Length: 253
Length: 214
Ligand SMILES: Nc1ncnc2c1ncn2[C@@H]1O[C@H](COP(=O)(O)OP(=O)(O)OP(=O)(O)O)[C@@H](O)[C@H]1O
Ligand SMILES: [Mg+2]
Image (cartoon, chains in turn green, purple):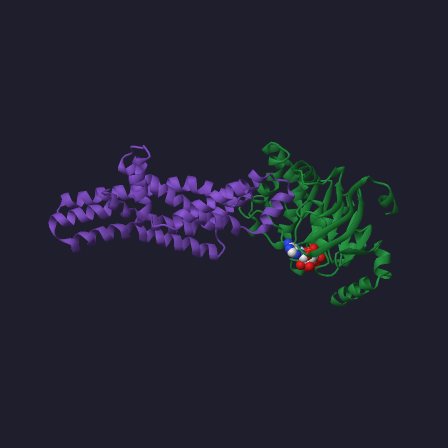
């Protein structure tokens, strides 16, 4: 783990990032470097800015100050930079956001065909490979509404992987799921982590964090308050707010 | 009322259907343009669409027909009555359908746009592969509802002398002096077309509420 922090090229860099929603200061001078192959878990109380932070990385939100560099592409307002970054970074949402009018397979081939300009045959081959990998290959012809929540989220992961991203962002991917489906999605994510995917996961699944995270980052009120390896973070949180947060989480589990 | 009068009414009905089809098909094409302009982030596209919608929703169809019928020739377009009426109905329908579809486009959950953006899809693909197909389904009940309104609205074309179903009814009734019978038949004809359409619209709405529509 030490190695992955010092080795690896810089994949995602945020420097002095400031984000405002109108008069509300949502990100306060956020600095974050994620190296290739690193797995980051981002946690913190509701409203602390976790979603905002990862949504800035693929420009779903714009920032007011500071800079973000992803895989060598410096994000600015040019569509070219945004496109370049979005080609490298996949995202999985809490609510899946699958396209309901398209089958599982069609969900997976749309962006590779439109953005990467793959032929349909190539896109389908890639899609089937990733659908198999998230163990949902036999449902390729179904519509999202015909699948369980856990299956839908695995399709969403496959859909993002079909773009062959260098990094993946997860925004509470298991929070909308029934408890019995959480594990299948976490297992899929653990598999991805094992294969060396660079990932930032917003999640309160502390078991997952212990198992795969190289670093846990704790946010509160738009600031990164604490940043540590999972062992230290869980056993000996440094900051009063992290202690309070952990206390609350553990009380609920 | 003999077969001759009935034939005359059926001819009128034919024109009613033709006018409706002209207005609706034209309205689909231009309404799509109006809707896309209306949801554009570019003010120079959005504002003309807002004005267009406001103009046609804010004035009576009757007046729109008058303006087209008397106005087009004044502008040097010497067009037959059916073309002037078709022009007015198309413009009218484009504004109403444009507004219906604007609402539907904006009713597609924001997460769909975000997922499309996160995948790197460009605005054209995002709109036509992701948003429009879903908006189309959402808008179906209201679109069918408007079709019924449009079909009934074509009766106003009578005012510029166009012999569609309602006008044919007036003429026949003046000939045989049996207004109740004649307008009874005319009413049944309108009803026979509008009622199933309305039922179909309501059926779509119920299916949508139940979440069956794919
Ligand atoms: N579009 C927006 N407009 C205005 N304020 C917003 C917007 N999005 C988020 N915020 C505010 O910014 C703050 C951070 O929101 P964010 O969604 O990043 O929090 P979070 O840490 O992801 O919380 P949660 O755990 O509830 O998902 C919150 O106070 C929220 O109300
Ligand atoms: Mg959030």
